[in-house]
Image 1 (cartoon, rainbow over the protein chains, first blue to last red):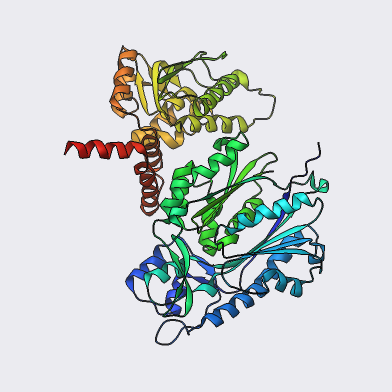
Image 2 (spheres, chains in turn brown, orange):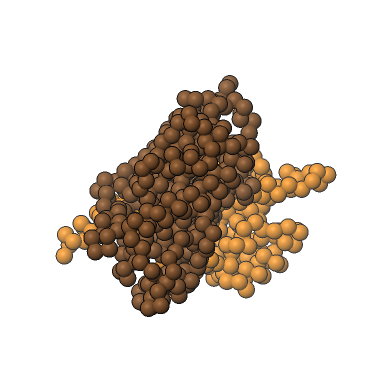
Length: 353
Length: 239
């Protein structure tokens, strides 16, 4: 039987050139508040790629206005996204001109025209390429985007859909010495991930995961747990993370996963691969003990967090890329993709190789 | 239904009786089917593994064919599934528990045996390894005793097994001991029980910082269950 479900044919990733350890950051900005020093040293992050302003002799970064941050977002996106797109398309021998549908996702800057238009101009996509920009949905947005991308691919067999998660989190930094901003500044990193999705009989024999379905979950009682606020004093958007997020997410994680697996008559033991968003150490712990995952199940989630920090919407695609590179996946294996973010939201998808 | 074992379920108790002297491929498949049932369908709260076993059946191996590690992996996956069932598991040993038989008892939550029972990991003297007993045994008996048991293949009698902490009770009356053991667990709060077991099983291989994060995640799950809310209401009524 002809199977025309969409497949993830390639994943490409890229990051800004400069990489910093947590200690580098404390030294660069001469941070000596013991609570912030301890936050940076206890985190499970070894390094992150970031666009950082120079430090001032008296400590702290050279000031950046909201306008500077918006420019940084655009500049960073234009430097990193083309590399991730090329890394993705090279794997399947395609060029931007072969893409029929482009979806860009970001929560770290506001642009009109959006990132899809900017990439069209810079990278040589065709003028009749369809586009959509998903802006402001946060860390879960990669799966909120993959859902319509997969639907588009299924409705347009043989056509190439490209999704690009572009997060320049250092364009959303506020440095005011508070714990609120220190938590955000210690966690997020910059990076771009691109995936090519296509539903085509050409790919029937390819070893690429088919996207079987999605399940969403929103916890509206916790709508304020992760959010951008306008900081009057700083004149910037400032991200806020509630300390109870891990527990809210953990307590609800079983719901979408249970529904998703039940729809396909599967049990958790049938899932060989878990691709979980690298939200932070505590939220990953909460998922481990609520969904019943082992450290081995979340090894890529941990290692992506360690090497890049939280890359927001693209994080889970960095983990997927590591899973594919590892060479352990076998034909017929099932995988669950899972992202968490503002709303509070848990998004899940089921794939099969 | 099963050829190599007997399985029955009465009320809260599911019982598996091993029905052949050695563990063969067929018995492993049937134990997997039992695990499917226990995980997917069964509402039992206690699983009893009853009988004795002389370990792996060498008739399953063809010395002329190449040796295959995947069967051992299948075995370990089965043992690990058994270890993580969301039910109390009790081993009732009524004879020798050798090799894989001994390994299965090590993943149960409680072990009870008759005075004539014995425990032996005879694999190393036979030229192979006693599965992941190399990982689990020392947690019960300490490294010194574990080395002796694994490396010499010593036969451990019931009394010595009791002294070493390998079994929890030695008795002629397994049924009475089982009833007492089940009663000792009190009301079984599946979630708290499974989480406690997981944290204990992980306790020898985790850094304290990681263990603390794991504990907090598990504790939040436990206190979010209705069982804990019921406890709170009952305790507050008392005072």
